[in-house]
Amino acid sequence: MKHRILLPAFVVVAGVSLIAQGPPGPPTVGVDLSGEWAPRFHEDQPERIPGPDIGDYLGLPINAAARQHADAWDASILTLPEHQCKPHPADYSPRGPANLRIWREIDHDSQQLVAVHTHISWQQPERTIWMDGRPHPPEYAAHTWQGFSTGKWDGDMLTVTTTHLKMGWIRRNGVPRSDKAVLTEHFVRHGDYLTLISVINDPVYLTEPFVRTTNWALDPHQQIAPYPCQAVVEVERPQGVVPHHLLGTNTFLSEFAAKESLPFEPTRGGAETMYPEYQLKLATMTPVAKAK
Amino acid sequence: MRAGWVGVVALTCVLCAGAQPSGQAPAAGAASGVHTLKVQGNVYMLVGAGGNIALQISDDGVLLVDTGTTANADKVVAAVRELTNKPIRYIINTSADPDHVGGNDTIGKLGSTIAGGNVGAGAGVGAGIIAHENVLTRMSAPTGKSAPYPTTAWPTDTYVSKQKELFFNGEAIQTIYKPGHSDADSIVYFRRSDVIVAGELFNTDTYPVIDLAKGGSIKGVLAGLNDMLDIAIPKAMQEGGTYIIPGHGRLTDEADLLEYRDMVTIIRDRVQDGVKRGQTLDQVKAGKPTLDYDARWGATSGPWTTDMFLEAVYKDLKGAAAPAAAPAAKAPAAKK
Image (cartoon, rainbow over all chains, first blue to last red):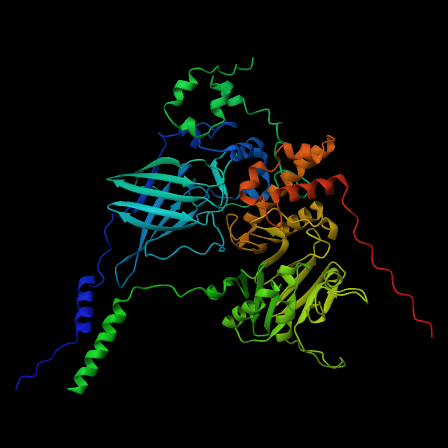
């Protein structure tokens, strides 16, 4: 007599659900961004390499608070020992001397992608972009220069969300970026070229999202050198002195406009200076006279 | 047949367990609103009980820096007990503020110090409560007056010198007098865990609260911030290393403290400049000396607003602060 084994319905459902889920397999979708990437500076070279001029806030969607912060900023603050070894935060580090290395972390047993890691040359910041679905830390957790990043694939584009950033900068002439900001990035690989589209949303200092693009070319011969940093006393000062310009006393703010034969108003930034139609307004303004 | 059914059920359980999505366990105390965060070494941070609380746990027992508000005391105890059943030996208070000492009574009574030798009866009952003498002065009252707190909440071990030293749970702990928010403030430094507890000298969500009537000063706040910067050493690239637990807000390190120190210094300098030029408070405010920081640390309502902060800084710098309340005169000795 044959015995019929009638499986309970819930067993059937569980079994079907497992089969649908499938066993652990190779890294899910996406593309391998790994490699040694050499930066390309054809975009925004003057700002990224020699550096922005004091008072140049062109094309930045900053508010009055950011403008005042930048107007008061004195580069001498970077001589303070505690300021000397600060790396560029995650949103700015791709913009500077940014020889980049990317590598993947794959779980040995499941062969699932756990994280994507990056290392950048200047001040050697390293980031971990978690790909395993873990949540971001709570609000009261510590912030870091590189923040806490999670990523997901949109087709072959890696979209990364970063929170828990320390206070940083939009432009390295004193234009600030707060620690309340959220950074969204999209990494796109097209053959031997890598493009990063980054979007900063900062409720403290920006009136609109700030979008930048940065590019690299694959360079298998790239060797990234170490970049140690040790703070020293560069300028003897009494304890607690913080270099800055008192409000209304920074006499250098119009030098950029004069040097570039621009009107002063556009150099003050603001969202409208990002858009091409601002050129119509620019044409009605008088440039600042060069100093004789 | 029965064995076959058991096998099917077992297999089902295995299948279902494998199909469940992974997830993180809820944070300790999340339901109560008091959250625990491991800092480093022996030190944890409790958030959500009023002021931030530091917790040091190891073989010797439990030490708390501050105890939150009275209303949250039971939640603090529950959070501690999720981590350890060791006895609460010490409480250190960084100030006399209600959101820092409110739990002293409830939590202190649950604890015990180690007493012996020629000390009197009752010694060892309750945790030892360490604070600057001025905390005791604020929490108690002269004879005949009603104290704001019960005696069981008062500090039992006060200091009047530069600092109070303690070795507990395998590390040296310095409680250092740093008046600034008031004249009763201390910071606490766990030397081996490398964690500073800043009390009300440093908050990540407000301008520093300066209680002029209780001996607070902008000079004191800045001295405290600068001294903490001198103590803190980052691990690498201005990150990690010494961690600082602020009075309120998120966990920080030297770089975060630096931004706060810079901000307070710059605002002080701006107000100082206005005072030197003979400006009134309204004129100083009209110059918007905090515009670049208000969206981050300012407030237009609540217990500590931007206006209140500016007024305190202005008055302090102008030297117009109200004098501290004179001590009550002693009652004459009864005639025999």
